[in-house]
Structures are given as C-alpha cells and as structure tokens.
Image 1 (cartoon, one colour):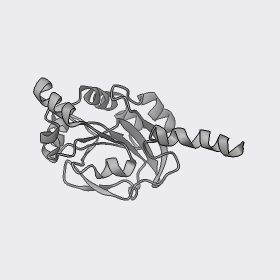
Image 2 (spheres, rainbow, N blue to C red):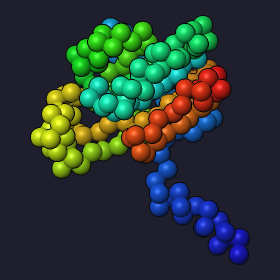
Image 3 (cartoon, one colour):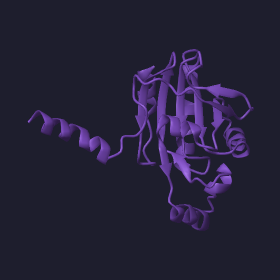
Image 4 (cartoon, rainbow, N blue to C red):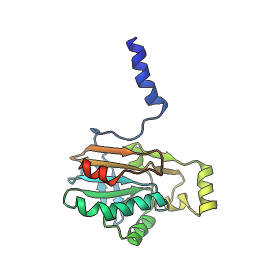
Length: 187
C-alpha cells in the first residue's frame, strides 16, 4: 500500500514534466552578459536579485510585464534588490528594447539559452510555430536570437538571496505573468 501511494505521488511529476528550479535550490553558477557587455553571475552576485525571464522583445505580453515592472517595482525595490530581465535575444535586440522602453533595470542577453537550461525553464517552439510567427506576424525568432534552437523562456520570476532561490514563480502559459505584488511580498 505504501508503494502504491508513493507511486501516485511520484508519477505525476514525471508525467507532467516539472519545470524550474525551486525555493531552496542554489542559483546556477553561470555567467551571461548584460547590454553593456558586463558579465553577470546569478550565484556570485552579492545583491538580492529579482530575475525576470521573458520570451523576447517581440512578445507583447513580455513587454507589458517589463513596462509594469519599470513603473511599479523599480522604485519600490530600490536599495533592497536589483532587477534583471533575461531572454535569448542577441545583444543588438536587447539593447534596442531597453533603450526604446527606457528600462532602468539590467537586461541580460543569453542567445545560447544557458540560463534557461540552468533554471530549467526552456520552452522549445516548434518549427511550424516559428514559421507561422515569421510569416503571419513578422516575428523572427531566429533573427532576434541569432540561433536556430527555437528556445525561449517559460515566463518566470526568481528571487535570489545569498546565492539561493527564495522565490520561484513559473508559467507554462505565456499569457500569464507573476504579479508585482507577489514579488514585493516575497522580498
């Protein structure tokens, strides 16, 4: 009976594919660049970090979230935490997005998707969807990343303190995003 109960608890985790690092996990020890070319490391950063993973500058849901973070969170977390936004956009695209939207927070560029892999939040777009985005919406996923891997992030927010994840909120539905009030509560 105990074995049956254990199987009932474990099988759904494998069947539905658990995604994302969890609270209590160590932040990945990887380096990626910001739009100024400076290296950023999630595990070796001394400041509390709010890491916002977004699909790309082409995503209207992502831009809405990032604009809300700029207008609602930046001042409130000043002195308590730094905000970094991460996508697979190449440097040129990430710089343009940051400049055009006047984002004051750090924007990280990760075309090889190292951080997505490390945080276990990869959303691999099908070839058909990438083609549809390009033909129907003029969204060039490959052009924006400079890669053909078709990986984007599941929208996610992690808070990292002293190298450890203290908050994790991941969405498989790209239309859903972490509420700013939840981020503030978690700080």
